Structures are given as structure tokens and as C-alpha cells.
Length: 380
Image 1 (cartoon, rainbow, N blue to C red):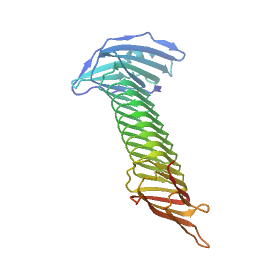
Image 2: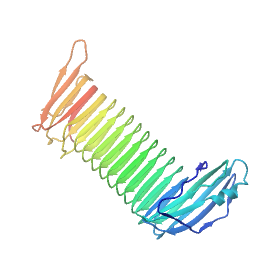
Image 3: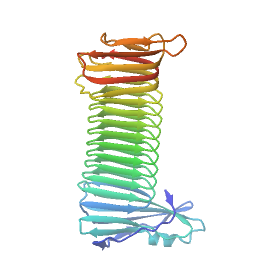
């Protein structure tokens, strides 16, 4: 990625500048661009900070030190006479702090009316306790770290995988892909999709516009998108999901769910616990499971069909209503104890209400539909 010149900020209280011998390859020309590589090493640290421009890749390896490769790619708008100056000023500066932190700063060359792109590849010991990475422009890749990872980019995608600790990832424009994460996840993007394979703790996934997919979350899940679908696999905790426009799907939620779709369907394969489901215009399909512990639950849509499947052994009190019933039977129940009453006028809307107790009653489940159909089914 090419970026315009920016100056990094150096210096930190208690920091010691570390001079590291770096090997530089000869500049190579590729059409209108020149490239050059630098490599260097430094002693490892418990915590590593990276402050850079361009793409940054951090890999946990079996090394017992830190090794980097910096690739600079540059082009001038006024010829190639500036190339030696740009490459002479490029490089990496290490700072060693008293809190067992190694800071890796990328030097940004001054080259006037030119464009410079950077890629910084860093190999660190797998046992590193913490990675804190910030890049002003470019993608971020982190993989194979035993500790935690914090990654932020002003513009670019983020990819993190095989991290045993927690992950905090933010980008001001780009997608985020998280693989196997052993701890909690906190992820936010100003615009782009978010994909999470596994979180060993709770997860917060927020995007202003894009799809969200969470395959497995060991704790609670909060997923929000300004516009896009939300796909959820298994969540051991509770779920809060909201989309401005798109479908919400969940396969297996173990401890209750709140979901809101501005315009789209909500479909839940299996759920235990309290349900609060709302759609501005769409179908809602949910199946409560054996052993579900319910408190007050509500399901509502303005237009669509609501289908709620219940195990025959579950004890609850059900109330349902439709303002404008669709077809001859707006509310259909497979439980005889749920009584349906139809209200009609010669000139006016037809509404239906249903109420009753299952297995002696219990927590109240209210279902409301503006225009459509309600089905209360026995779990198959």
C-alpha cells in the first residue's frame, strides 16, 4: 500500500534507544518503483509494541529473539534522483523500556512529492505475553502468539489467528478475520465484515456496515451491524444481536437471546433461556429446547410469520395477538390448552388473540404480530 509522508513520534519515559545492526540489500528497480529490504534482530521482551506505517505481519515462531524484515517500495513524481535519500532515511528503531517492553518504531523517510509503501515482517517468540500494534495505513496480520494481541489500523484489514490470549482489534475501514482466539474478543470496524471462528471468552463484534459471522463463542456475544446479515453458530452465554437491515441466524444459543432486525428475518435453530426478538418486517422462527430456563419473553414483528417451537415438557404461560390476521386462521397452536379467539367486524380489520398455560403455566411468553400469522408448534 502506498502512503504519503508522515512523521512518527519517538521517545517514551523510561525508554532506552537500542542500536541494532541492520543488513540492507541493494535497491531494486521494478518499472517506476524502487524497492529495498532491511533485516535486523533484537533481544526478545515480554511485551512488544509496534508503531508503523503500511502493512505489518507479526508471526510467533520458535526463535528466542526478535527478527524483522522491512521492505520499502517507493516512486517519485519527478524522476528517480531522490531514491538514495529515501532509502537512507528508511529503517527501524528499537526502544527498550524498563517495564520489559520492546518498542519497534518504523522510521518514515522525508521525500517531498513522492509515494512510499512499507511492509514490516516481524518474527517473535511464541511465548510473547503481549503484542500491541498500531499502523497508520495498511493491513495487519498476527499469528501464533501465546499472549494477548491489541491491533489498530487507520485503514486496512486485520487478520489474527492462533492466539491463546484475548484480542482487541479496531480498524477505521476494513474487514476483520479472527481465527482461533483463546480469550475474550473486542472487535470494531468503521466499515467491513467481521468473521470470528472461535473465542474462548466473551465477544463483542461491531461494524457500521457489513456481515458478521461468529462460529463459536464460549461466553456472551454482542454482535451489531448498521446493515448486513449476522450468522451465529454456538454461543455458550447470552446473545445480543442487532442489524439495521439483514437476516439474523443462530444455530445454538445456550443462555437466552435478544435480537433486533430493522428489516429482515430472525431464525434461531436451538435456544435455551429468555427470548426478546423483534423484526421491523420479517419472519421470526425460534425453537426453545428442553431445560430452557425462561423469564419474561417477547417476540414481535410488524409484518411476517412467527413460528415458535416448544418441547411438550416445558411449563409456561403464552399470550399471542395479531392485529390483522392473514388467512382463515391467523394463530395456529398444536397445544390444546392454548385457546384462540377471533375478533371481526363487518367493515374493519380481523384480529386474533390466544392465551393459555402449558403444563400448569410459568414464565410468560408474549407474541405480537402486526400483519401475518403465528404458529405455536410442538418440538419435533
